[in-house]
Length: 110
Length: 115
Image (cartoon, chains in turn purple, green):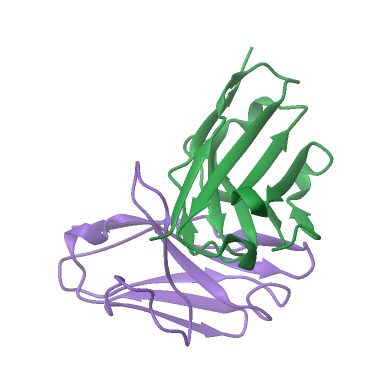
């Protein structure tokens, strides 16, 4: 059971916007940065973004992140076939004294 | 270019030990925390441990405390994960990553614990 809760799946057609939620608590999202990662099968996970920060080089501006209270979200606009992947949120947890990942959301492009 | 290359994975019996290594290049290694993350077959990502720049602080997920030890050698730009008392549930692909927020990842090294 993950400390951070994500929906198991999300989908959209090319060009649509897909939003993935990440729900936590005061000890993690509520008090620390939330990070998002993209993981394609057979490859190394890739750091994507976190709210109010510049995107790393190579990450399209179609990806955006937000946070409010103990929840966060990743939005993928202008959905493309290459966006099909697993997406994870993560944050430091002050109570656990560890970095916690969400359960992951599989994005499918229909 | 940041590069992280893991090694040391393999097949080990329950109760056995393995030492994973991660060789880093392309950045000032001593300026960053380093992290290990694993992914069990069919499961999501799980943070395992991290270590401060100078090695003075380490943090572990509860399930490996007392069994795994993270260490580093800044002269050799390397971070290690000594794993003892291995259990079947430790079977996973183990990734090395840079920084507390894992902004760069290696390709991973597989660990299989089975009799």
